[in-house]
Image 1 (cartoon, rainbow, N blue to C red):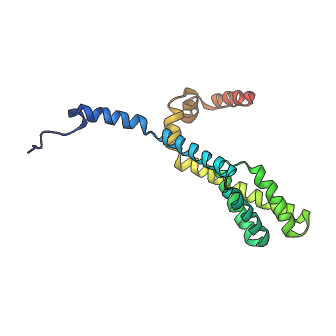
Image 2 (cartoon, helix red, strand yellow):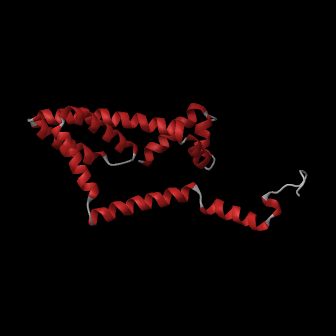
Length: 177
């Protein structure tokens, strides 16, 4: 029987220590995210060359949007906002929206006007969503990965150097682009 004074921790078991070290280094969040991204990209590329389920899903969504103009308008806004959050290029969706709404509205100018409104609202909602995700969901990760690693970002985050540091760094950032 083990008494309360004896502790059973990883310090008492060398094999358990090596397992914990290995599991922490091998199953990090960065590795899991990388595997997930590679898996999704591989699935999309494989689908593109074989069954084309994703392409047919987009085509059916665009046809549905053309058939149901009012509900399709709001669905298009939601899809555009989600695409903004997931870093999908907006040019494809913008051109597709202009084409679909142009045919659904009867006149190309009315369709372009409807698509422009849907794109503006969807992109704005996506930008707001991106801000909220960055502010509330991934702030700790950014602090741990960037702020601790780079002194310039740490100084900006803490406000140590005041407006001179900010103006100097913005000057530097804009000259890089």
